Image 1 (tube, rainbow, N blue to C red):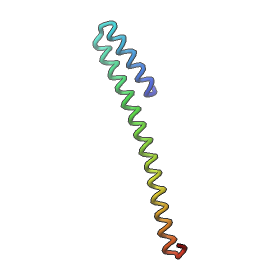
Image 2: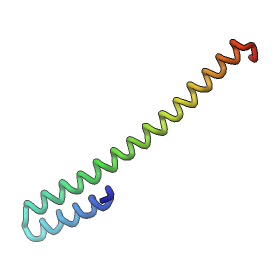
Image 3: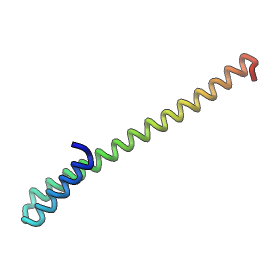
Image 4: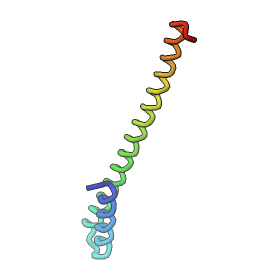
Length: 75
């Protein structure tokens, strides 16, 4: 399931648990919702890390190329 699906499913279970006074179902729903939110945050963090790693790689390559140009006298 997707992260959002887990969150929605969890919210529905939680609500049904509250309405039917089923604490176990309510707790299961809360856990499912938290799982979906945590997974979504982890995915977001992974995307941010990839983005920042790419930016850092580009900066390092730029500095390296400038140094090579200086050494080669192309400055």
